[in-house]
Length: 419
Image (tube, rainbow, N blue to C red):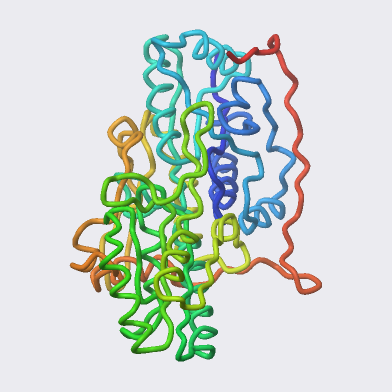
């Protein structure tokens, strides 16, 4: 049987540009002509594969794909579900390959982060063990920017742009309201173990007196004494202090500053570290204190996408198809920086097994010696990733984000019962 069909899926948290990668995958696969047959997408990531919940992208017109490339969210839906090991759950892999065989899937492209690259590596290995003709490619995506093997992750640049702008504009408000009694603003951004997004808010600052004055990263254990001394010095100098906090910051003993809950798979939900820091400062000094969590806003802001980020999201989608056609199996498309000023980059393939489940953290050279700010080297590295603006069409004062009709593919297998 000739296995020429391509299956694409999205996984993990959404970004403002993951649909740009999806549109580029579909465009590139169509341009491949007879080398690729049908172009399918799974609903809700690997769960859609297990459930045989597939859609046919043939219904997308060229105009639809252009609109899709400028829409946030994930058109095909995502999931937070990790494949088990082959040894622990062989039935799970049997089901995946039953679905692949039933729909003649010869190419599987998974658009996600660390866990998705693990799935790419596992499925590649399982296909070889079965002698099943499959090429697996990972398409990178994560606002946390914590994927190894790549200069940056598509999705990060736009989220970084959003939080940097938020800090810039909030800083102007704070400056106008500065008082002798002191004001503090704390903004908590995403970043479980890697502080890239928090570090990016430093791009809002053009001098030492500009917000954010302090940045708390997961890479640096929280020294409350040092933090409070820095806050007090800043307020005494300026009348206010703006602080960025990564959600995953930890105390000196390694415990999270704030942890919401664990789910059944042991995934920890974070959130509230910014509130804890705000209360600590308010209790200690009596300053008027506000805190904010951009939460979904930082990863969903399609109204002002980074030009660099959008171009890279497009590029990894096209490259994923090209690599698949070249038979480069079990690999992730990675962005390689070739120059800093001006910023230049290209794409390459890196083995998914070498980077799966690893976390790329902010290096020590990017962190100021006192651990409360980032270095100039970090700013040089991050600045080009937020440059350029890509805006969607607007109507009645709002961005136009169309809803797309997804054409389901007829199921050919019995229903799957997940354990």
